[in-house]
Amino acid sequence: MKLKSLILAAGKGTRMKSELPKVIHKVNGVPMIKKIIDILDELKVQENILILGHKKEEILDVIGNVSYVVQNEQLGTGHAIMMAEPKLKDFQGNILVVCGDTPLLKVETLKKMYEFHMKSRATTTLLTSIYENPFGYGRIVKENGKIVSIIEEKEASEQEKKIQEINAGVYCFNSKELWETLKKIDNKNEKGEYYLTDIISIQVKENKNVETYLLEDNLEVLGINSKVELAQANIILRERKNNNLMEDGVILIDPNNTYIEENVKIGRDTVIYPGALIQGKTTIGENCTILGNTRIIDCEIGNSIKIESSVLEESILDDFVTIGPFAHLRPKTHLKEKVHVGNFVEVKKSTLEKGVKVGHLTYLGDAIIGENTNIGAGTITCNYDGKNKFKTIIGKDSFIGSNTMLVAPIKIEDCGMTAAGSVITKDVPSKSLAVARSKQIIKLNWRKD
Ligand code: UD1
Ligand code: CA
Image (tube, rainbow, N blue to C red; front, side, top):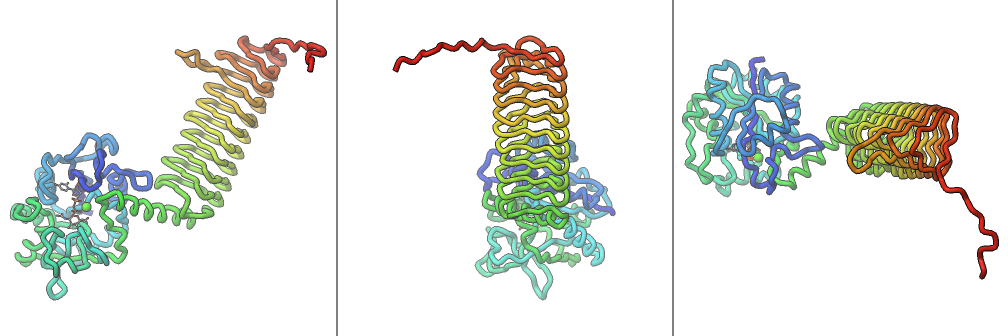
């Protein structure tokens, strides 16, 4: 496929009213520009070239390694494309132009449009759609069913404003003809900008074959210019993602109130309750139950796991783990098979081996806990002395009494025990009980009332 793409992303996005460049605002968890690059990669174009300008460093920080050209002054969409001429003037093929602010496009649509462009041997093909309220979009002016020009909102007459067929901002250009025509556009219009859309009327006048490809689903070409449109795009993408998951066998109790970001993967028969927020690169296995008020980000979750009302960040959970309610797993936590982390427990950068139970009111940080050990309610690893962090290591089959303070660095060997209320500052040998608290005194008949 002799096809390269240009992605327009140099504009200021003034209507977004934001410090962030428009194209890195997220749609269902993914920066819109990234979403578009993903779509074009799926289409297998030979090369994606971005046109960057306004806050380009911030955009590059988000998307990493890409080819790009710079438009220093934002003098319009036509001017933006001119910036790519030195890079593409010798390219013999077609150039697909997409705006960085239309992240709802589907790869099938681009494929069909490209095939149509090739079949009709067009010089230029552009994607159009019908909007009941077309305000803001360029209108498609046709004579005898054939496009003759695109009129922007600002220049449109009352009559033209009524036209409901709009320019989606997606074009397939014959490369050589594109560079020829671009030389002929000017900025004599209301905005004083070089409009890419002026190419159409010039090529039509030169009797070139300009085609339109009508897209039925107008939601796909929604251009995001404001935060209201950003919210609309979020809703649409979320619905698509939820539908895909359900088609693959995931059970969503109330899809309208379930928030699962684009790159999340979930296995069959896993049930997600309303109010769950599942983000980033999270993967969840089969037969899990995720109850409401749970936020999971960048986690690797196995099969048959139950999570209730908890926050999980960058953690790994092996099969049959149960979490919550009201637990917090912080980064680099690994819970092995059948571990239970219960009410008001926080775990950070720790590994809990198979079958460990931490039921209530506990903080475990920088710890390794051996198989089947039970951590009593209120246990705290004192891992920080104000300057440095230290490790707590507990062997297998140990029993940590309620309200134990484990002052790290500390080691409890296999089958070790601590008495409730102890402040443990010395290592505990295997099978021993450590008691570190003041003895109980009884004062008989103490009360005088
Ligand atoms: C544009 C089209 C309009 C179409 C609509 C579809 C023109 C003149 N108008 O209008 O016909 O209906 O898209 O969504 O093309 N950009 C640059 N450099 C610039 C100006 C813009 O790179 O100098 C980029 C922007 O970052 C954005 C894209 O081009 O990603 C479109 O610009 P925008 O200002 O949103 O154009 P619209 O007014 O929406
Ligand atoms: Ca736009």
